[in-house]
Image (cartoon, rainbow, N blue to C red):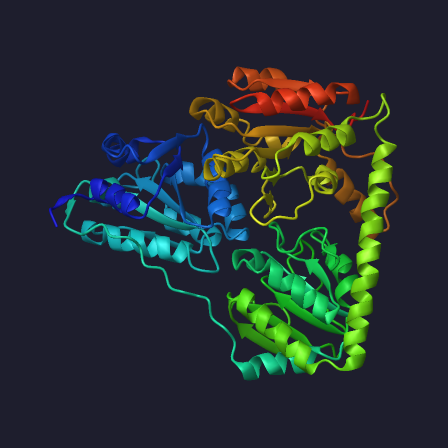
Length: 558
């Protein structure tokens, strides 16, 4: 192989791995390899005005494609700005390869301007973090980074690129990264043992998470739930692991409070956990999650997730798709006739109940479209009517998310993504990343007025690159989620309800989202009443490029 500077070799490696986009915000110490981009026209640099936006776009693209996506950050200050979104990517198992520049190894002892321990900064929010110290290992390290990011459990990695190392030559060959095959199947004895533990249950549940989606196992999960007669509850669930309108889908376990989850898990007499861990709340309970004597079986490709917080009776490190199919067959062989009848009757009853729930929700919606009502319901109904069938939704609406999901139900894997990890601001950039992944589809990103302001700069990127995603800001003039959470806190501490903290109010001064969007190059309209909905949706969907709708979903403290 002909020797060339490592700064050139890394771009050759990205080309060998089929990388189409690099999301980033440039800086001086990366200028060497970024300048070489002029010779790699197949690699498009998607320019962000702030690092959180760059990571958010990469996160959306990585989740949509389920392949490693490249993000470039500027040394310690840039990495620092992106840490919150990297945490989001880590929690969401997004396969990111983050390239961070550094001034050089020669300056190690100088404690110079912008010097920082980038690897140390990134380790808590990445699957792996490292630094290139020898140009002859640059491509070897990059390939390892791609492999680590793109092997289940997926996750972000960081590679630090010192400028003086990048300027030295390497003769390494740029060849495609090798990925291991992880489609492992439990042996028959293990599946039979799992079925033995679970088959006799009268009130079984499945606790499922995004490992199901990553394994493309939604169909297998639904089939197992039908055969076993089990409710499916979500935990760490931000993808379509089971269609929302499937009879077995029962909802999400408590995101915030473990006591809410325990009311579900503690009532079950058999539990199957698949594609997640137990349990990812903000305030989890420390014991008593499962009733005493309840058998618990856990399936995941992530061995760390199994029995991470609570003991299980059987853990299977296996591909969820194959394991669920095998377990379903084993349950069918193990279940008694009485258990089969119970499961059949449960499924019949749940199908009727689910259809009634959907119809009742529709009737409630009919009553909330009066001329003086808030436009939320009317807007979502009209959007659902006008959206093409293959549309993609990126949901960071938070308190408005139940309304969004009711009208745009997450039924199709790969067509619905929800925020995760607790970092605000992924709604707009995440939708941009998804739009680049699916250029032929309509992508709609929902966010809140508070969350949008974390990464509003992403609108400029949408305009600059002509990324035609549509954005909806659910504007209630407050940090509504905090208002709801503190009310739960008051109850838990026996504190009498009182006036909300003033710091949760965002109405003074009111943010002009239409003017702000237009100043960043994106056309926008404000929707305050139901009679404005139809025209606004039509204009958004007919506009070739990006478009923003400021949707009033609350009146703040008027």
